[in-house]
Image 1 (cartoon, protein in one colour):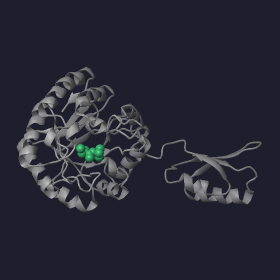
Image 2 (cartoon, rainbow, N blue to C red):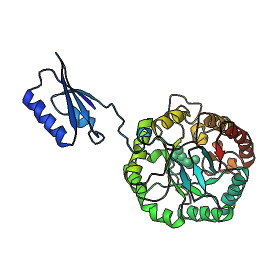
Image 3 (tube, rainbow, N blue to C red):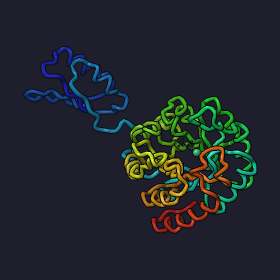
Image 4 (tube, rainbow, N blue to C red):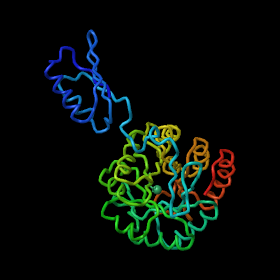
Length: 340
Ligand code: PEP
Ligand code: MN
């Protein structure tokens, strides 16, 4: 961190400030020029808040020269992290996983039929929401605990690990009891820091979706919250962001994939369903995600999209999902990725 001091800052105040910084375990490289006085902080500055530095009257400006995230930072962990689900599915480090299923779990018939079809097409993880974050309180809110029970039934049929969204710390015992293989933290909860800390204390992999208006650094800082509590198994998900464009539900930020892979060692998956909101473009966006270097895909598939209780317009039919997988598989071969 580099701190520029105000010209003519009183010497006693500057010395007191330096003593405070040294008491935090930092070394100071003091450089006094003809009209500028700069302090270079050496050491672990991740707990030094810019706002705390700027609040000191001797400070003119302040800038970080290293990232505020350590555990998620590729600089300190150059190899790709590989996250394992249910003892059989691997994501990252050349292993590619497709997570597919309906937006919401609606009935036993629906979830088992979709689970069978997506598995036959090559999806290794079953997705399905039991607790749904809906914009309107009058929309379908999910089958909740019953939805978790139906996901378990579907898993008993296909053996696929499950990923499902957790919205509330109080539901953690239910998720553990259901043996959920991967906990999804949805876009709307990406900065629910208490929830992040709570899943950080679990021994369950986490799929962390990017917030609707979050920067990549904010996404990585949320991953850092989970990792700082002791859970290293975090997979990041780009699911589209809010922009000025209105013809699609969101704008898929595919540049996020190579950037996140430069910033972190964590696997990155892409969700083209929520990113576009439109089923017709999901297959092309999925192909583009593979080409951009993604480690996996999350795709919404419904047996009858026109009657889906949520996100029907972006859901593929099982036949459309078959066609998507038929194009993605050879592409993975081309890019040297191994499909689970
Ligand atoms: C979902 O996966 O169904 C979902 C609600 O996603 P997001 O949090 O990305 O909107
Ligand atoms: Mn959805």
